[in-house]
Image 1 (cartoon, rainbow, N blue to C red):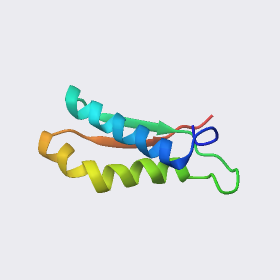
Image 2: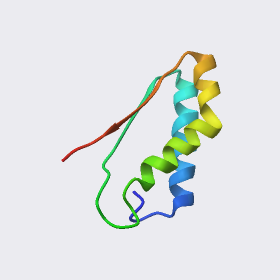
Image 3: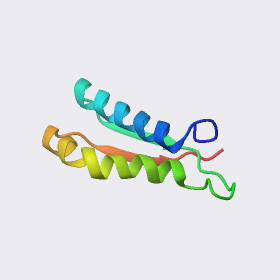
Image 4: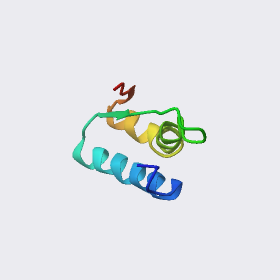
Length: 74
């Protein structure tokens, strides 16, 4: 996703994703494929995690929902 979108677009996607989960009262499992390309490794995870922690963690907790991140391999 980051290869074709700006970090701002990825951040907005994360916000929309978490908002939808709250609206639909659903737990979230995010699985991203990290890579070894310099300057890219972990960027997606960091962006999504930052949005969750800074903007959504309290709301998820208050609503009794969970957020889980998992690394996709191959």
